[in-house]
Length: 404
Image: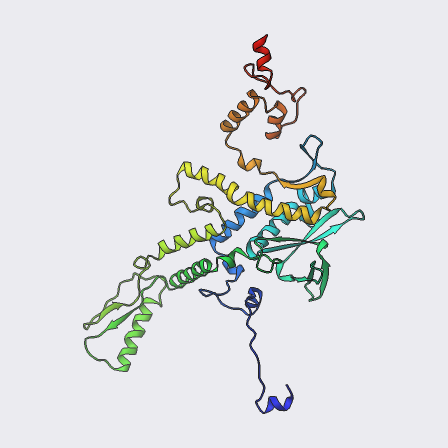
C-alpha cells in the first residue's frame, strides 16, 4: 500500500482467522465459554495445580532406569551406560534428574508439549538433557517428513535443531500429527467455568460479601437528598472495614436486595462440581487432590491404587516410549530400554507385602534375594534358591510316579 493511499484513507487490511492457541495467548485473548483458555491461569486453579503436582512429582520421584536385556529374557540395570546417570541422577550440570523430569512433565500437562535439547558425546551417547520452555520452541515439518525445531533464546536469537537433537514429549497428538494438545485446551469449557467461578468468588470476597440492593423511599426525593442518602449508606457499609452490619433506615425507607446469595445460587456446590471436573480432566481420583466429601478408608486406599493404574502408568509409558526413540539409536534399542520403576507405588502396607512374599516364596516363584531386592536389602549368600512344594511335580512325570 502506497503512502498516498494511506493518506487518502484507501488502505485496506485483511483479517486472518486462525485457531492457533499460541496466537490467541500472544494477543491476550480472555477466557470465554468457547475460546482459548490461558494455560498459565488455568493451571493456577488449586485443583489443577494439585493434579499437575501429583502427576509430575510422583513420576519424577520414581526411579527411571536404563535396562539391558539379558540372554534368558530378563533384565539388568545398565548402570555403566551414560544415559543411566542422566535419567537417574543428573539431567545436566545445573539440574538434577528429579528437577529435569518434573519440568518436562509440568510442561507436558500444561502446554501439551515438552522439549529438551539432547547433548551427546563423541560416540553419540546421551550425556545430558537441557529442558526448553515450550513458548521458545517452534516446530516445522520439512519436505522429507522429518521435523526441525527452532529454539529462541533470551536475546531473541533462534537456532535450528534437527529431529535427532530434540526430545519431544506430546500429551496427545493433534490433527497435524506433530504437535501435542494441552489437556487444558481439550477441556477448555471446564476450565473456563472454573476460572469464571473463581473470579466471581474473588469479587465477592473483595466486597466482603456485601449484598447489592436498592433503597426504596415511599415518596419522591430530590437529587441532593438521594445523593446524601447514598453517600451515608456507602460510608456506613463500605467506608469501614470493621462494621457490625446493622443499618438504621428511617422515614419509611425500605431495603430491597438485588443480588442472589451464594447459597441461593448453589454457588459453593457448583464450584465443587467444577473441581471434580478438573480432576477428571487429568484422570486424578478426587481424594488424591483433597476432595474428601465422600471419602472413606476403603475408597481412599482404592483411589490411591487407581491413581497408579489409570493415571501414572499411562503417562509413564508415554514418556518411556518417547525417550526410547529419541535417546537410543535403533541398534541400541535392541539391547537397552528405558523404564520407570512403579513397583514402589503399587506396594501395600507391611502386612500385605509380607503376606504376598510368603505366598510367592512357598509356591516357588520368589527367592529370598528377590524378596530382599523389593525391600531394598542387599543379597545374601544362597539367596537364589527357589522352593518347590512337595505336593507338586513336573507336568508329564505324574504318570511315571503312579506306574512306579
